Length: 305
Image 1 (tube, rainbow, N blue to C red):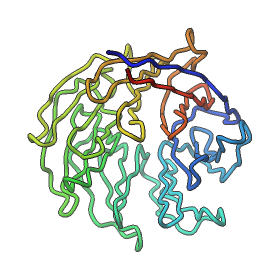
Image 2 (image 1 turned 90 degrees about the vertical axis):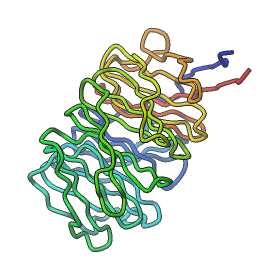
Image 3 (image 1 turned 135 degrees about the vertical axis):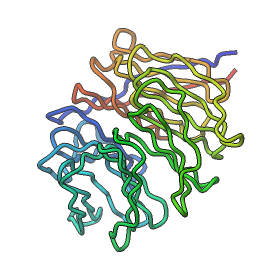
């Protein structure tokens, strides 16, 4: 039986001057960061609606950033400039890696390893402490768009614009699997809590569901949206996940059955009017950012029957 679900848009945050592409948590559970085409990195607080704090203003656009909480660092990928490291306490830049030849689509980290996806298709692997290049993975001449880390299996997945997903070993960085079910660019990847399943989606508007225990057997393909799916995000308890799309909608899915349980859009919920680019699901709120330069906060109540 489908659970009852209630949707309420509780807040709208504005202030960005261009499309918002990047969204990540802050150290405080009630806070989060956004960044985008205007080069601004802004910190917001769920308890203080629409009063953002400008952390930094960079020259170029930002598609990716990552919080490293144990080091109190915010890592910002500035396109056509490089990787910048901001100390959260002081707000000052403590280091940078100049990489003016790259546009960056995602950054992830594991222990002392930074994994960076670039528009050239190259995956850059850097040592976090020394900021030295460990290795460059070069398996495609089309953009590397997204990264997901599977700690349980000691591997990471990368989605590419050549329609492929490639799975690499986290120690030796060897290619383990190559998945070719998608028919267009892969924009987003998410492992479940135990690393047993992988969700993928992208420009073909399809969600694919992979079983890592059987060498990434494709268990299901779901025509999920009308246009490109930009991001997938699990709820913190991994019972549900959300997808957002260029079709201006957010969809809520049951993670066990992969069944659709709710659609959030402009006509029914005063949702975004343009492409929705990223989601962040906290304990008490789902946060969405869009080409419309707005941040929306959604209260999603799910009553399991």
